Image (tube, rainbow, N blue to C red):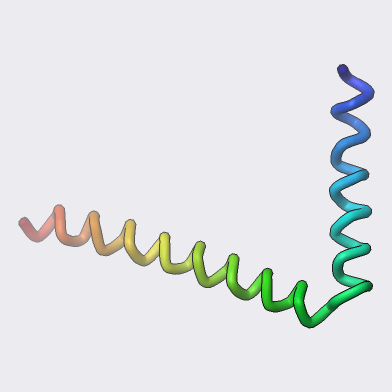
Amino acid sequence: MARVRQFVPWVIAAFLVYAVITSPDKSADTVRNLWDILAQGVRNIGQFFGNLMNS
């Protein structure tokens, strides 16, 4: 099991490099979309706590 845990990050890294090399535009769009989702989530959490404090 320990060997698998050492192997998995390398497989993921290799896949990411492959994905960026084969289609950089699509990879950039995917990263941009993920960033937008994450940023919107943080804004929503901030708005939630802001509304909680103002109630």
